[in-house]
Structure formats: structure tokens, C-alpha cells
Length: 209
Image 1 (cartoon, rainbow, N blue to C red):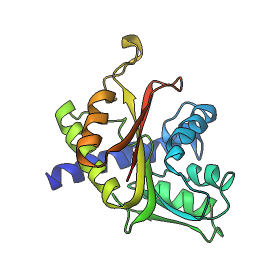
Image 2: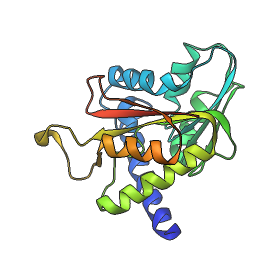
Image 3: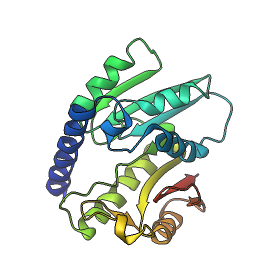
């Protein structure tokens, strides 16, 4: 299973490195369709942050660090770790945010320490040639990582199986929101929220501990 996951992550890293090379440090460079939807997505994920005092956050699949900009506009005191399997993404983030002392980045499949909160945006979407079963196993293993590196809660998003059939693509993974909600309730916390009302073909799960 470990070798299978390593191969999968190598494929994902190559996919996003190519997107960055094509489109640069933009939402298209991390395979989103525009800044407006990216901001809307970040707003849902950050609902897991339920405090005004200082906090720390792990961003799994950070890309070029766009979430750091979003957080900086809204919070005064926080520390941020961006984690990505694409070395070129991490280099771009480090160069773009050089000199920001409370932001750091690593090239890895998971954070190297716990934070108050963790988020993952878009990392469960592009399955490439993997089967539903393989991708679900990867999703669940990654949720274990998010749970293990989060002291107070974590959030993530997935494309929804309620998407319009004519807009669905075979290289993308569309998760059943009810099944993912149930899995999180049974495995991680009694305090789980499913957000599916923000006009994108996806949903967000918030897990509070």
C-alpha cells in the first residue's frame, strides 16, 4: 500500500507541477477555474477556525500558498505551514512569500508537526487513472493524517457526486458527501459539519475536536 501511495503522489506532483508551469502562480496553476471560486472555497474551509486568539495552521496541498494571503487579510496572529508533494509548487510559494516570518513550506506528503487546525483544498479531486477504490483508500488515509496533525480541528473539500452528469470528468473523483460525513463522524469526532450550499460542484467537511 505504501508503494502504491508513493506512486500515486508522484503522479499528482507531476500533474500539478505541469499546471504551475503552464499557468504560473494563479488559481489555474493549481487547477481551479478562477480567483472568485478559490476565495469562496477558502471561506468554507476557514469556518473550522473558531477563535480570535493566535493559532497555527497546516495547509496540506498548499500549492503556491494562496491560502496564506487569504488568512493574512483576515487574521492578525497565526503561524502557517504549507505542505505540498510538488517541489516546484513549494519553491514558488517560498519565493513568493519570502520574508514572511510566520510562513514556512516543506515538500512532503504530510506535515512534520501538529497545528491547531489543518486544511486540505482540492487534493482529493484529480485521481488521474486511479480506480474509485484506490482513490477512496487514499482519501481515508489522508484524513487520518489530517486528524493526527490537528489539535482542534480540520477541514477539507471534495467534488460532489451530486454534480451534473454532463459536467463530470472521468479523471476527477466525485465523492458521496453523505458517506464522507458519516465516515468522519464515526472515526474522528462527534462534531462534524457538512457544507454543501455555496454554489460550487463540491462540498466541505469541518471536523471539530
